[in-house]
Each structure stands twice: as C-alpha cells, then as structure tokens.
Image (cartoon, rainbow, N blue to C red; front, side):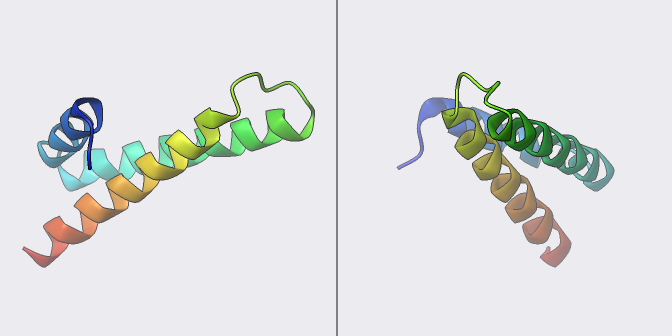
Length: 70
C-alpha cells in the first residue's frame, strides 16, 4: 500500500511533461550512481537511500510508460 508521501510523489510525477520526466530519470540515475559509489567507499551513512532512489526510478519509468501508452 502506498504511503501518503509516495502518493504525493507519484501524483507530482503525473503532472510533469515527458521531457521533465526524462530529466528527472536522468537525475535519479546520477544520484543512484553517486550513492553506490559512496557506499563502495564506505562514505554512505544512510544506505536505505539507495532503495528509495531505485523505487523512485521505477516510479518515473512507470509514469513514462503509462503516458506513452495513453
């Protein structure tokens, strides 16, 4: 079940244009790369952030594919 925070995030994604969604996807992937790099060098304090970013990437991709089908 989605939490209120996730629901708001998903709703805000649905309001964006495909170009904005693509930019958000690129930004999220860069953030994930940086988090993984920090984790590998033992500089990352909040390892749960990696999972959050991965889920956000999946949410962005889901909204993108749904908008391309519509």
